[in-house]
Length: 466
Image (tube, rainbow, N blue to C red; front, side, top):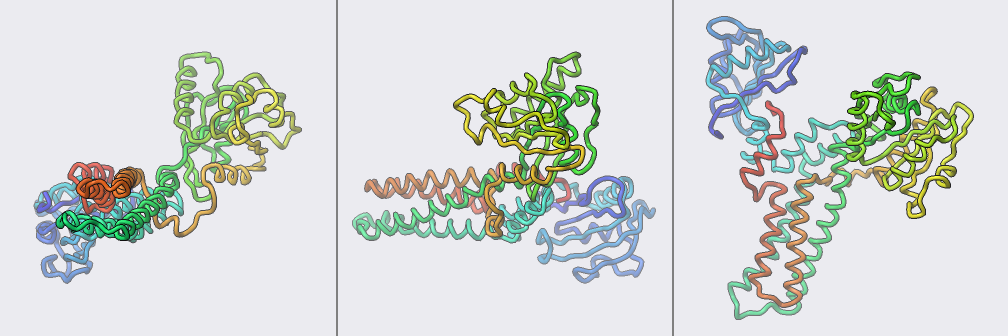
C-alpha cells in the first residue's frame, strides 16, 4: 500500500468557495497528467516544482471544472513524495467529480490519516508530531493550538529523544559488562548508573505531571449544570456561551433533554451540559431526559450547582447540596439582581455532613443571568477549579497525551525495577531486561519502537485527506 498513489478531498465537505483534492505518491504527477488540461500548454510532468498552473480537470473528454493545480516534487513536500494539489470550486458535486476523475486516472482513495502516516513512515515527522497534526486540527482554544504547534515543532520529541538516548547509554554500559562477566561493576560506576537512572525517573515524573493539563486542552472539561427547575440553568448556559443556545422560559421543565456546548473559558475548552431538572417526572419524555441528565452527571468533571438566590431554600436545593457534596463543585447563586434569600453558609448548616471538606462543599458565586453580573467572576472560578496555577510557555511545549502517559508509566515502572535490581546486586541480565523494556516504551512515543496495530489505532482517528 505504501507504493500506491493516493488521493482524497483535503477540505471539509459541504458548500464553500474552494475545495482541495490532494494526490501523493510516485505516480502523483502522472495521474494529474491524465486528467488535467493546462491552458498554457505546460503539462504537470514538465512543470517545475512548487509551481501553480491554471487549467481544467476533464473526464471522458468533458471538462468538469476549471482549477488551479500545484505541482510539488519530492522530497520537499508534506509526505516526502511527489504531491499534486488541485484547487477547484467548492461544493459537494465539483469536489466529488474532480476526485472521481483523479481516481479514474490511476490513484486510489486514501485511508483516514494516510497522508500524515506517510509523512511519518518517510521520516519527515515522528509519531508525536503526527499526533500533533490531529491536535492542531481539533484545537478549540488558543492554548490548545499553541500546545499542538509546540509539539508539531518537535519540542516534546526533543525531550523524549534526549531521555531515550540517556537510557540507551546506560543500557549499553550494562550490556558491555554482561559481555565481560569477569569484570564486576565497580561501586562508583554502579553509583553513577543508579544516579543516571534516577535522573531519568525524575524527568519522566516531570513529563507525567503535564498529562492532566494536556488532556484538558485536548478534550476539554465536562461541566454539568444542575439545579431545581427554574433556577436558571439554561440562562446560565446561554450567558457562558455568549449566545442563546437553550430555550429559556418561566414554565418549569422547559429543558427535556441534555444540551452540550463547548466554550472557551480563559483559554481552556469547557463542555457545558445543561441538564433537565431532576424532579419527579410527569411523562415518558421527561423520564428519559432525567435519565440522560443522571448519565451526564456521572461523567462530569465539574458540577455547577445553580440556585435561585431570590427564593427561600427548597427541599430539592438541600437534596442536591448533599448529593453532590463529594464532587468538585461550584455553587452558582443566580438572580443576584433581586434581594437575596439564600446564603451558602445556610446550606452548610442544613445539609453538609461533617465529613465533607470545604473544597468539596463548594464556594458560592453570585450571578445574574438576566444582567450578566458576576459571569466573569464565575469564569475565573471555573478556570481556578480545573487548572491550578498560570499557564507557562514551557508547559505548553511538553503536554503529553494519554498514550504518552501510558508509555511513560510503563517506562517508569521498568526503570524502578532496574534501579532496585542494581541496588540489590541482582544479575545484570535482569537489570538489562527491564531497562530494555523502559527504552522501548519511551521509543513508542516518537515511533522509534512501534507496531502496525499502534499505527492503525493512531491514524484511524484522523480524517480522510489528512
